[in-house]
Image (cartoon, rainbow, N blue to C red; front, side, top):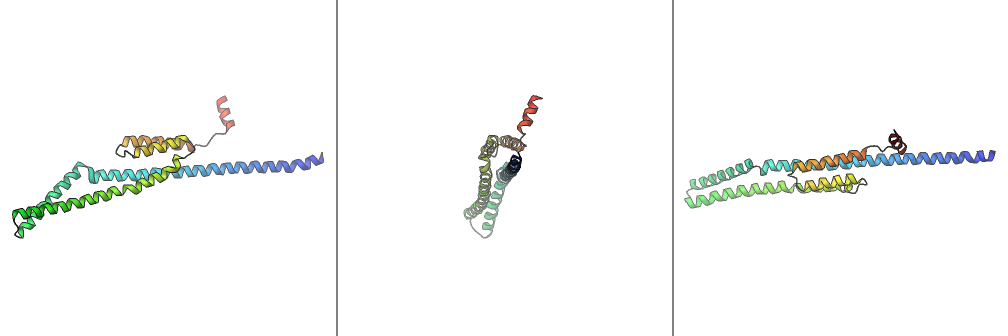
Length: 194
């Protein structure tokens, strides 16, 4: 009997230590996974916000009818200014008109160059979105992966704000649900029985 007592206590202590280590490891892994998901979701949302801001700025600075009208008027002013300066130097009307057209063409070419540079700035932002979305697309929770996929699909049509808002809401709901602490099985059984 004494031998069983001497043998049983170390076995009990070893089992208790194993159980405590297992519980601690599971909690640490769960906390790490939660922090990782939060960080990945924040990265995706930040990248989407940056792209969205760039698209909105592009619409205001380059694509709006008012800006196009201003560009047209400025081109006309460049043309008139170039023609007037050429006329003042004694050139013919035909030569003055060509100088004016050349001045307007230089202005429009510069505007086009700035517009292309602004459009090119979207490439790194799109790459940031893809980099942020990649781990989320492989997430173990299918709702998180589907939410990230819907955000990527909505980014393809960045002008459609309603679609992007729906995709972001779906993604946020999926992440929020995945971050909720899981209830233990005995808690679930007890709540079902109530």
